[in-house]
Image 1 (spheres, rainbow, N blue to C red):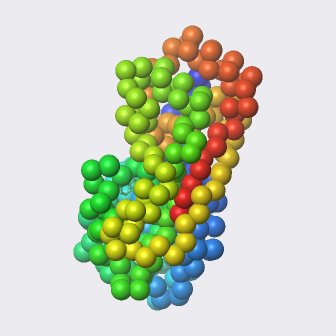
Image 2 (image 1 turned 180 degrees about the vertical axis):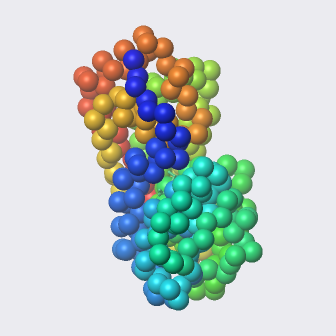
Length: 252
Ligand SMILES: C[S@@+](CC[C@H](N)C(=O)[O-])C[C@H]1O[C@@H](n2cnc3c(N)ncnc32)[C@H](O)[C@@H]1O
């Protein structure tokens, strides 16, 4: 039997997002490199761990806004904010549309968010990102691309929980190769200075931890739909296969 804790998803994400946090920190320090006094939008800020990092770099004379459509995550972010001394951060429920009146910004930072955008809304969202930036503004992002696709064991999990749905409908993750995203950027008016694809491996020590991570990260995921029989089969596979490591390929 699975022993999932009874935390809400936002708390779970806050405590299980070390990989995202690590990659986001690299992106901030190696690519975005915010300067003191700058204004930065953290699009899809989640529980705000990286938003706080951004704030520490722009300093008191700067400004950081974190936006996210998940009210539970924004609530966790605001709780964290209350524990900090006066720092130049505000959190806003919503997405780029709700952030528009808060611009213009020197930079947009977005960590593992774009693969959640609805396909039909991508072009408009990219355009709004372009419009909310100052003329020399910079967009820096990392997302999941589809080489390889979701790891086999994750596909199997979704096949068991949502047997009638394809992988994208079941997970909500809308992956594409990096050239598709480069085209979206160019179409919106961005000049692409750098794009990289890299392999990132995240290991979960056992099936329970993997299920917890999926529950914390994927709104549609319903682990309660896994039967004891299904869990047993997944457990056996998890122990036998190298599938305990599941690779992401990312582009920014
Ligand atoms: C994997 S989490 C990343 C959170 C945070 N950036 C981090 O690195 O920890 C993806 C986040 O994107 C948010 N999201 C989903 N769709 C979005 C959209 N259209 N606009 C902005 N954020 C969105 C989700 O609510 C979620 O918090």
